[in-house]
Image 1: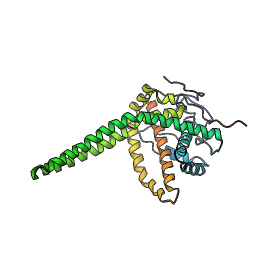
Image 2 (image 1 turned 135 degrees about the vertical axis):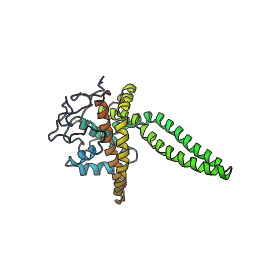
Image 3 (image 1 turned 180 degrees about the horizontal axis):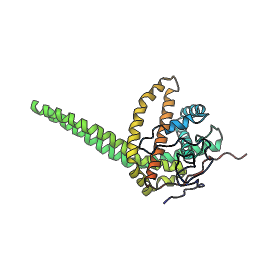
Image 4 (image 1 turned 90 degrees about the vertical axis):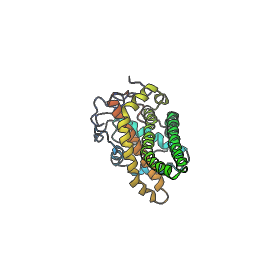
Length: 288
């Protein structure tokens, strides 16, 4: 069942208008003039964020401003996260320029700050079980390696056996830990994208809906996150730019990861997971 977590509903739950990749049933907010780029129906949809960036004539200024905002400790990251929430929400609303314009309006910046805080709280709470599980698996892996190392010191013959066992353990264990690390992130990610789209913290704590999204999204999530990790390699070259390179890399990775999460959410909903009603597409502004 779709739920309304505050704010008006924009067309079909969780989907945007006619410009949104041909998803039926919707209109909302400011309908897209040129139409958002059609989204593929396969598992891989890594460059949606790139399409949004290239489709915005003010993209360079927006990227520069919100990359520099991250210079401000803690608050800068929260403001950028809140702005990103509105970008994802406006994308689902079918707006032709999803990235909100740069503004220094106090009310708007406060909304970005609190929206960023809401999504971080939800992400941290949902991350705790996964971190515990990963910690246990990590401990078992390295505990096994230590045990093999102790066995190797007993005798030369045991050392040869232990060396072979250590290689086998690493071949199996390291990829398993990597897959587990990626897998435990899917539940916090699906909870956070519900907060992004609704603007309500309660949407992120709807346990049944979040787990249903995670069950339907694990395959495209795994594929896209692995590819996103590979994309980090060439992006790291931007980090060589003096002063702002690292901030630019961090911002672009967050931006692309946000659209990967949105894409996975969309695929999970198309597979039968519960959707959400979109919150307001425009942030509030100061009166007068």
